[in-house]
Amino acid sequence: MTSVEIENIEIPIKSDNIELKGSIYYSLNTPPKAPFIINLAGLLDHRESYFVKLFTEKFASAGFYVLSYDYRAHGETKKQTGSRWDKMVVKIFSDIEEVINWIVNEQSKRLLDDKIALFGRSLGGAIILTHGFLDVRVKKLIALCTRYDYITTRIRFPDETIKLISPKYYLNKFPKNDERILIAHCKDDQRIPFKNLDQIRTHLGLKKENVVQFETGGHSFKNHRDEIFKISLEFLKKL
Image (tube, rainbow, N blue to C red; front, side, top):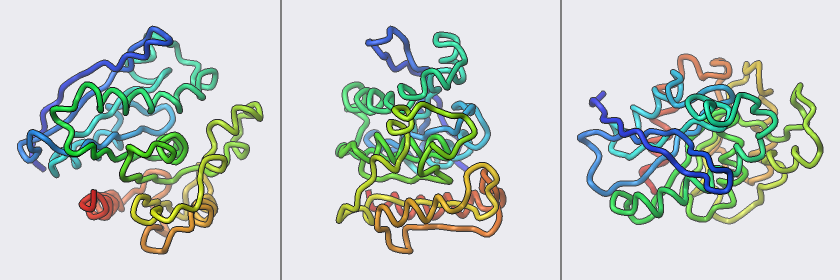
């Protein structure tokens, strides 16, 4: 893997007077102008967590700019917001809009042809298939082991919150879904049941080539991470 450079950044959320702490990764393989990938962490993970950093470095080595950031109540951002993520989960989801705005407005000299992609696991996948799905500026969506409906969690969110964070209430069958969306899941995932994969696939009308499934690997795709990267990279080449 090519060594990567790391540039720490802050993304202001002016409405709440906070700054999301983040990093931009790139390598010698990254041209001056290149597509941006936003790597979205799972619940309670942050930009330095193993799974997040692994894929961030892989994509940067492959020639992309990769931005990962700490959600509210996560990582370094937690110092400003506190740790009660369940009390701010709706804003954790909607903050992706501000992150995309920041890239478009503040990284225009680096961003190639407005090419932005989202990659993420678990909670990150749900952010991708809600606000990310609705944002036409996002050209590629790669969502791993994503929950379809947050009514199924152990935490009993209010009904109005469930509707604001569940892909079930955002997704539609659009003609270009197959060009834009890739999903994956492991059958032995103990956190998010495998049936969520088929619920999402059916709602989006995705063809089988866009749906990756493994018999084993759990919630973190153990022993399949290199394969997930290769499949994702091939999908991203069509950005």
